[in-house]
Image (cartoon, rainbow, N blue to C red; front, side, top):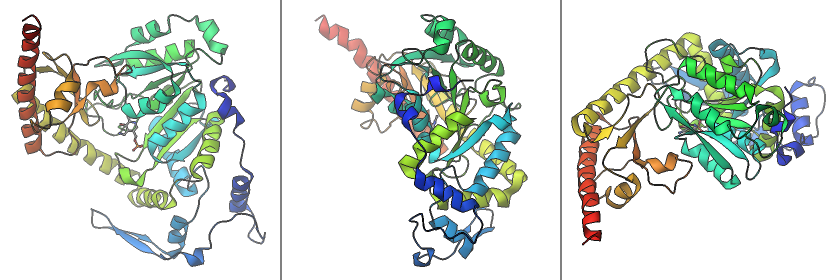
Length: 432
Ligand code: PMP
């Protein structure tokens, strides 16, 4: 594939930084070469020399002076080399992407920074962009300042709707779109597993159909998958877009935020080498390297766990969040039956509620939510046009107790009741 058409003028201008290149050279050079090049601080001045972290399972993760020195020093821009190796092995094991030799990985500061770099590498002001609707707010917040022309692609309980994707692309002829560099959609952004905010896991059939359309229109798929391990449908996982990627048109965003710890800020992007190289140049200019301490901690943890330990941990996460989800569903059934509509989240951390008798959840929540002692995220935040009224809201079941969920949805039911009454009275007032 020719990737140059996907890059905007800024990304094309990004060149390797000499200092970073020399740093990479230093990592590989024979030990007797005297490098008087990079201005890294002298480790002898670091005030911390070693450390140990207590794990929940009783074990200890020890950072001896050698490891600690790596934690406290700059690292190579693509990532801490042992972690990169582990992520390569993990990605290969989980997704067996075709044409592995043509792909590369880069560690990111959470998947959010990967998304930002990828979108800012491709977007031109005013470009049409295909986004799943409803859409993760963090992705909208990256794209919106670039004033794109959002082409929303509707999703249902099976994932992105191919008919909606085709309709969004219908103004263009596939032949014209395939080569153009500006003014045509170049990528599709989607969260295929446990969508934030809907909790939907896209089916294999849908993913295959969407991939075929992407092939026809020569689109890059931005597969944002931080909830990959949080799939609750019991069967085996649907193949990722990366797994289906025969052409090299998928940039996949993974994250340790939901698997290990969000505060460590470690994720990774996998994709075709030419695009990952550009991300690396952006990353080098933006942050030099991802926090070494975070990368070393994740790497050491993965090494301690081994494949089996990681499997056990992700199994535990699924059990934990399924119980949370079920508690939320129990409260929803108790208080919101007949008031709201929802489908059972098959992944992720959210329940997406449609409030039947309320035109706009924004005013309801922001004007009266606190008074009623409940707050959720109004659906507008996930819509590409946030000026339109929206009947939806997002309830998170990740970190509240079943008692809090019960109380929260009980309060929500009362809030909705009052809002419905209020809305009924508005036309009466208007018409005297
Ligand atoms: N994508 C989605 C769909 C998310 O829900 C989130 C976090 N809420 C992110 C990306 C960003 O995650 P990270 O902590 O890895 O930056």
